[in-house]
Every structure is written in structure tokens, then in C-alpha cells.
Image 1: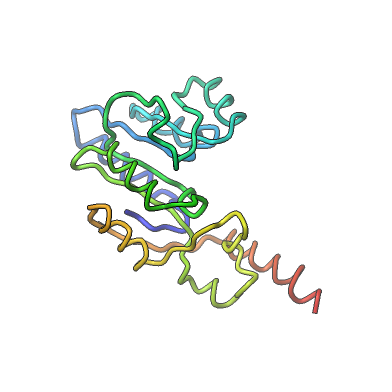
Image 2: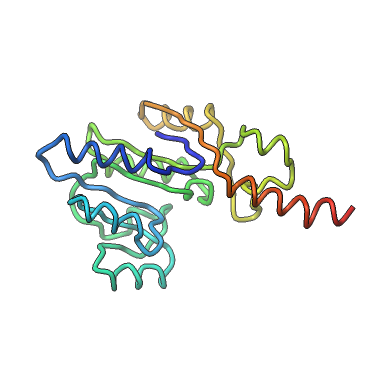
Length: 193
């Protein structure tokens, strides 16, 4: 599991390097794929990508691009008619903080993973310096959209509970998270006081 504020080139590099170092076809499931930007990128690398997205409009746009994307909710993944194979990588980019029951989601996606596969979870860091500096104006709080906030220990416990091993937890800070938090503080914090 990777806990990144945003993946940048690091996440892409993991999947790309794996594709270079194997003769087997790499398969990636992107949960919460939106209109498929990441799937387009890995398709160019010769990687087979499948997406799940709850937005009908995003799914329609992805399908128009020739991508293999299914309409569905990550919490009901067993109801989605996915291809009958397991994945080398399952990616949840800023999805896990939005689900009502992360334990059920993780339990269901583990079933879709190859024995040596990896799950890449990208979420805001609940222990970030920005959270402490900006408090209730921290951009990543986003109530009621963000139902859960994760730190290293909560992700690790969740992984272990679902028979997963945590390979790495990495933290990145993006300038746009800082700018968004400053915007909230200036416009809703300082001005309203």
C-alpha cells in the first residue's frame, strides 16, 4: 500500500518498471478512474487497464476513448461484471477517503489481486503538517466528501486485517494542497473573524 498525498511520477514509475521487467501482460484495475486519464497513459505503455467509476458521465467519456471502464461503486465491486482475471496492480487514487466502509472495499479488492499483486492507495495524510498548520481550513478535510482520514497506523492496521503486507508508505506534499488551504484560511478564516 502506498500512502501518497499525490502520486506524481512515483506511482506511475512502479507500474511502468514492472511492465519493463516482465514478459507477462500487466493488468491494472483503476478504481475511481474518472474519465480514464491514467488508463490512457498505461495503455500507451502496453499495459492492460480496467477502470471502475461511479459517475455515468465519466464512464461514458472513458468508453468513447476506447477504454475498458465499468460503472459501479467500489463498495459493491462484487456486483460489477469485471473481466475474469486477477490484477497485478489495483489503484485507488483519492478514492479511499470517500468510501463509507473501507474495510469492505479492501476485503473485496483483495479477491481481485494476483498473489504477488500490489494495491496502491493514495489518500491525504491525516498527520500532515498542513493539517496542523491550517486546522479546520486544511483543504483535505473536505467534509462531507471525505468520510475518513488516514494516517500510517490506520492504513497499516487495515492492511494487516485484510492479510496484506505494507511495502512502503510515502508522503508527498503538493503545492496545490498548500494553496487551497491558504485560500480557505484567507477567504473563510481571516476574513470572517
